[in-house]
Length: 110
Image (tube, rainbow, N blue to C red; front, side, top):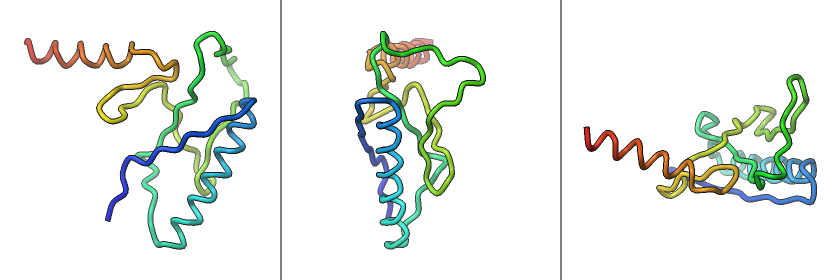
């Protein structure tokens, strides 16, 4: 049995609060998975930190950033991903989806 495409949404008043809550939820999910003899395929796991463009401070080289973990393994952060056929990005703009459609249409018209 497979349970693909599970999504979890967490919010916080601060970045640290959001990541703390996210890791708490992931720890509870991992416990559930172990109790029910289920497996998380870490190669397919990723997360997006949604935030408006204006509040996205640049990350300086060497700066420590927050991360999400399952059993001490970091989950890959991505800037965009496909969700129910729509490409969504961290700014919740249509840019990534439109670029994906342009690429597909370009291949189809070649």
